[in-house]
Length: 489
Ligand code: BES
Ligand code: MN
Ligand code: ZN
Image (cartoon, rainbow, N blue to C red; front, side):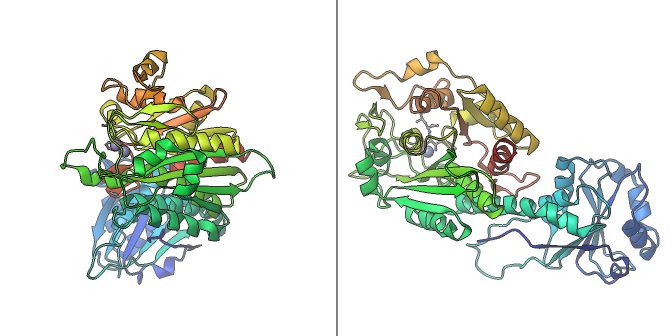
């Protein structure tokens, strides 16, 4: 599994620049004096950097954007990447600058001159995040990325600031790997095994098997998985970094390792995308990994429901009535609305067993949220303004798009069933909202709760600043930030 690139932090060594191979990145901005590294490179190249920095093209770059100067005489390096970044750059701009390096990082290695920059650690983080590449299933010669060195005025303090960020990057990579993995590889069994392996990091990991789930009465979750050869599982991951005996915060994830739709089968075109239907569980796993890696001072429990939604002779039918762990009965009108059935039981279990101080669930739950918000924002639904606003603030500060959606009794009324306590669908209109209303029926009255519908943000067809196309790991940064700001102060 790909891990973030190791980055060496060292003091600036101007003597090393002429012989440096690979790529060199250097920061410049029109309204500030050139750095010593810039001046040195400029002298070696007989003024090439000054000319480039004064060009119209450079003037048009936004903060964090870069220009490549290739094969300059006087240098052994293949290219100098001139990045527009001023001393007052914010976190987003610094990450973007780093991502420009990460995107073009190759076998020759990269050297980043971040002398005296207050956001050198953010540059390193952006670099690591964007250098992600999921190449496990590509045969033939794989390009091995070269070393990365970041030169800073105070390398020890930059390394110290970068360490918790590296934990976040590794959590994000764990999520991306899980989400990118095809469903023949990432079965419920394989998924659970990858989570169990996090025991090494100090997490308590338990795997509940079908027999256990049956005893707990998880009829809603079990109904979804009953058509698959892969047995349904619930995995409980506990991180005890906070005060002893203090109730944890709960993260719940939808882990449908493949969603065919079941008997209400999906159309063939695009069905391959449903390998990402475990994205919520993937994010929960990534956050738990980050918390363990950076030894977070908080108690957090992550619980994921792992199932596969398949059509089969034993599969659940439209019209079946299942009984949830809570005791409420559900008429399964559409077997493709399976995520909510899984979450209903896992959320109830989390509340019964852990009495958490709050709960956030993540799920690639509805196509409707993509119609509403596109791929730019996750849909946020909540019964608690305080928790919801704290989450929105955390997402904003991490640059992860999130937008609150409405809820209300009129939406809830759409779930009324003729023969059971509720139906699992509320019609096409407002489909993401009726899905959230369904979930809220499994949230205890005073439990602060947020539901994040990540159907549009878990996987993208185009590159973003911090991720190549494919799995994004959306939410790991925001949730890590929320836990840090809310519980570790
Ligand atoms: N996993 C899908 C939602 C989804 C769609 C995720 C597109 C990512 C991209 C979910 O299980 C589903 O099938 N939802 C249905 C619900 C409907 C049957 C009420 C949908 O959105 O069509
Ligand atoms: Mn579905
Ligand atoms: Zn699904």
